[in-house]
Length: 243
Image (cartoon, rainbow, N blue to C red; front, side, top):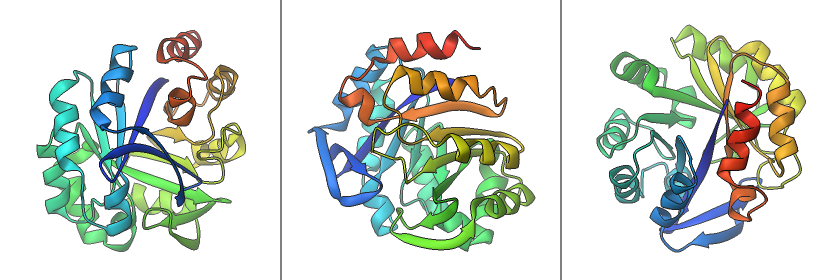
């Protein structure tokens, strides 16, 4: 498992939301490049960048920031938020993204998904954002009654093998990871996935890693890093020790 610090961009700044609530945000950096530089300087091996404006509007809004980040750091950057057309996907990749994270449009427009997978193969990652095991869409603002496992099967049928599983119930709370949700998703996925949500301490990372789920390849951390609960180097020491 590797650690992926999250750089969430809203209004041109680095912020964190609580449980996906745009009205419950904390600003950490006036310029997202400062966060990206900091995490890479501390030893980050990859970054997870989210265009929150794009996730809410459905159209990428912060690709200039993405391009600035990818132009200055020498680690892979995966990018999500508002990527709902093949043109938007291509723009994100042209901005330097190593992978693109697709959400809403991947479920509602299978022709779009098929085109993205056909053109970009394993550079396409599907975001599984869940409340109580049920899919949420449109930047987490729309709740469905669709079990996440059924979405995983649909994505497998379309050739997808990379996922991000975000537990909205845990996200931004510093309340610990969704262990049962992680186990459930691990059983469903044929391929690999990255976990996101609720990480607060090194013990939380140890707990996830100790699950020994061979398809769990990484963990996204945001608030705990910004609030200096632990460092990137300390996180890698824990995760590397169990691999």
